[in-house]
Length: 112
Length: 112
Image (tube, rainbow over all chains, first blue to last red; front, side):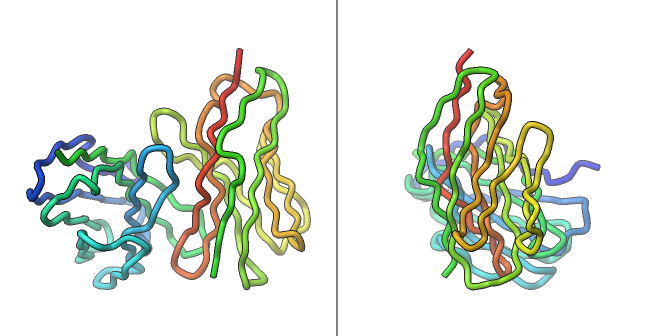
């Protein structure tokens, strides 16, 4: 049982490049989330999904896109990377909205 | 609107001593859950303890316990017999609707 996995662990992008952060969970959770954590700060919600085919914006969605074609996968797409997107990105999942969230190990992204 | 406030950005404690981390929140709901998460230098988010608002008894997990004051909307975390491995960021979290609201965190350092 791997839980929530994220790839890659680290990535350096040039300004204007695009990439997809992968997130997969094997717990059959309906709810999945993407957060970003800037240095010394808390977590800010980017996007979330309550089930396959359903996504919604969080607090800081600009510059990102998501899709949820399966229960297991919830990729986060960065288009036209900017230095302001330098951050650590966490994916999380939970079976119900009021349950504990299970987090992936994070992806450290640097945009230069 | 839901808010979570952690007013102590940094704290330190001597090994084997007790420390209390503060958290206040605001919600219009009557039944809800509250969580404390720990984020060590590895960045992995780890659930420390959870409290259900309809339960008057304070939750405990080994050396970790909470002081839950529903009327005051206060949810503090007490760590007894502090250990070096407790050095981490600690986040208070309030799930509401489909989202989780996190505080800005308290950086705890355990001094040998």
